Image (cartoon, rainbow, N blue to C red; front, side):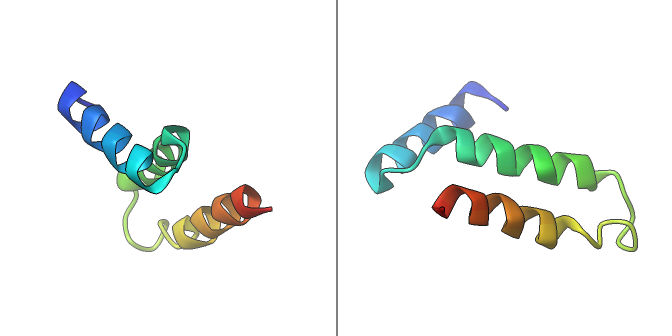
Length: 57
């Protein structure tokens, strides 16, 4: 991630009282799935939902 992108994420997180690490984790999940074809990306939404569900508990 570039410095400018990190700065934007930090500003958004500060405005909405979110942890920047949330975005980092979501980007990492997407990055893991990015090189796969659509058939093998099938679990991405389930993994993202699971991560978010853990944060809101």
